[in-house]
Figure 1 (tube, rainbow, N blue to C red):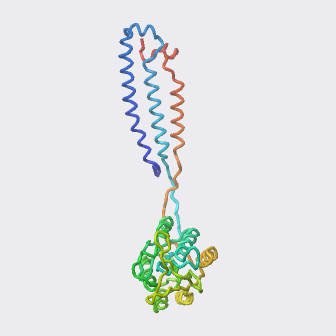
Figure 2: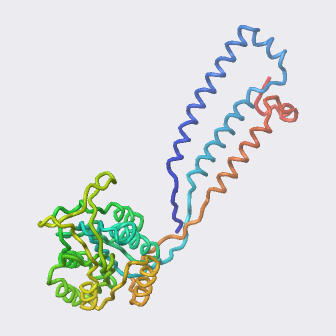
Length: 346
């Protein structure tokens, strides 16, 4: 059974111009007749222009209208499919939990920890094919940023929107992020479950490792990516890109934030995952990509789709044929047709 599909329906709007052209044509015919009537009587005009055809102008207009109609249909690009094929997608469900606490503003790793995290995740997404992604932002609490999807473009948009002002409560609630990630995998048909925690590991709660172990029991592997340096750095507070001051503690001393890789490694180990140093973007992306390629991938989407073929060329050819005929047809009478007198012209 043939199946038809119209790709660009908006071009059907061109068909509206045909009635408009018809009105213009009739207005032109009416104007010509009035002008000719002022110039001479009908019988005299016939004698002055004996080879003028009354049918040919109508034929030329019809050919032009048919050409425009065929061109409109060609632009719509109708497609026809006669056979179905099954499309399978395989991959893992990959949720990125990204730390947006104030410590991620530290510039001990360029341009700063948060921007580095965004670069890392963006580059990882670029390497994905059939996997689904989700995004969680967390600081003193965690909240969903993007549910599980295959729309990588939307993922990048939400990723770039992350900032340290999204969460009013400060801290690094890794436990909340892990618990929230569990709700992302609420479909029993979902494939292998991977949670990627991107953080400096500071201000973590003591039960983060236990939460990771619980997540592992539910089939969630956790890969942690450490962003920052062991030496650490200060936390600049800026307004409109201009440095105002450095973050201070309750005693008025400048805060020095450091990468806590030990905690991130413990979390990854508890959830049968791995720890990755995020200092070098290319190396971190390669490591994670290699880890994902080693995971078993399951089919999570299979669709029956028609194998459509473009049909615009037939209508484009018809449009060109009608235009060619319109050019070749002259408004004068054709001698051999005149002899047959098919249209009973006097």
